[in-house]
Length: 117
Image (cartoon, rainbow, N blue to C red; front, side, top):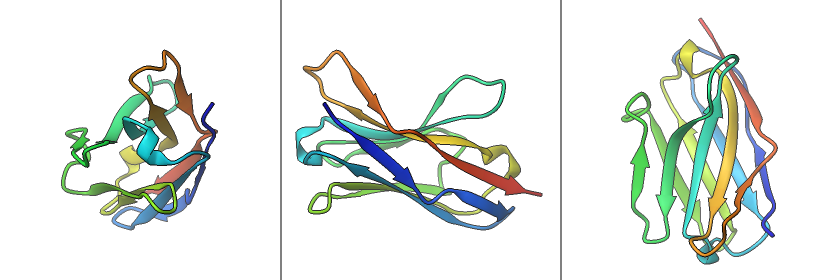
């Protein structure tokens, strides 16, 4: 079982920045991938960014060059630095953890990000 707790959401004006944090209940070195997803009202949940165990990262085209995913193995934390925010980035952001051998995916409770124009 893996518990994930997000923090750092809020209200920001377009062009501003926020940093989301995700705290994991186990060593993130035991996870094959951690990622950030988001879900806007009336839309499906979508992948924003992912970091795999080797440190490689991948981003949705819509956030490339603006968002950065990173991790702190010692603190069991994953972060999402969001710069140059746009109103279309408004959504609930969820942290996700995956282990290759585990059929379950783990999710945090979500944190709201609202970008005003």
